[in-house]
Length: 90
Ligand code: HEM
Image (tube, rainbow, N blue to C red; front, side, top):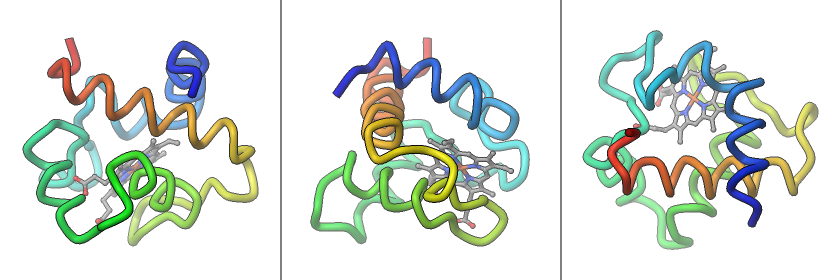
């Protein structure tokens, strides 16, 4: 996946709610490593697949992007989120 392109997708679609890997809507559901590990523990498909699933389908107050972003965009933004969480979003 193209992480640099994922960064662009994130800036255009995610940053309003997830600036710096946070979550302005639900402060417990961040994109930081501890929160992602807890969230992803329910998925056997792997981190990026699980992130891509959530982006495609949405969940609760998070909108679905399946009709707006391509599968490539979603795979790239999932890689970016995984990469940034591993780096502590800095
Ligand atoms: C949760 C990614 C856009 C609001 C999450 C989670 C991921 C994610 C991976 C699960 C993290 C966790 O539970 O700790 C993304 C990406 C986006 C995006 C990659 C852009 C493509 C947005 C936008 C909003 C939003 C625009 C606000 C309008 C939320 C909320 C949750 C969440 C409220 C918690 C959902 C729940 O479990 O109740 N996001 N998000 N997200 N996101 Fe996003």
